[in-house]
Length: 212
Image (cartoon, rainbow, N blue to C red):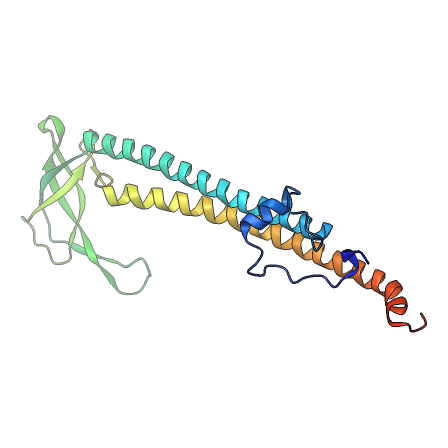
C-alpha cells in the first residue's frame, strides 16, 4: 500500500532538521516513507528560511545605510552648529508640561548671545526653572546665530541605525512566517482530507469489514 495512504506525520519534529528539509525539497531524500506532501512542506520550510536570511541581509543593509546617512548629518551638524555662552536678561518663566498637568523642569528665559560673526542676538532659550537674570547658560546656535538643538551624538546615530535594521527585519520576517504558517496550514488540511478519503476506500479491504 503506498505510503500516501498512511496517517500524515506530525510536522516539525526534531528529525525534520533544516538539512533534511533541504534534501527533501531538492528531491534527494527518496526514502519510501517520504510522501509528496512532505516534499511540499519541506519546500515551504526552505523558502521561509531563505526569506528570513534575505530579511536579515536587507536589515543589515538598512542599518548600514541609515548609519551612513545619519553619520554624515551628524558631521554636517557639527560643522554648522556651535555652542555659545548666553546671558539671561530676565528670570526664567516656568512653562506647562507637555502632559498638560503641572510644570516641566525646563523654563524659558530671554537671553542675549554672540553668534557667528560676533553679531549680538536676542531670544528665548531653555534654562532650568529658577534661573535668575544675568545667569550664563550655554546654547547651541546655527550658522545664522539662531538657537537650535545640539548636533546628533554617536548614540543617536547608533540608535537610529539599530531601529532601522530591527524594523526591516521584523516586518519582513514576520510577513515570511505569516505566509509560511498560512500555506502550511492549508497543506496540512488538504493532506488530512486526502488521507481520510483514501482511508475510507482502503480501510474496509484492510480490516475485512464491508464498506459503507
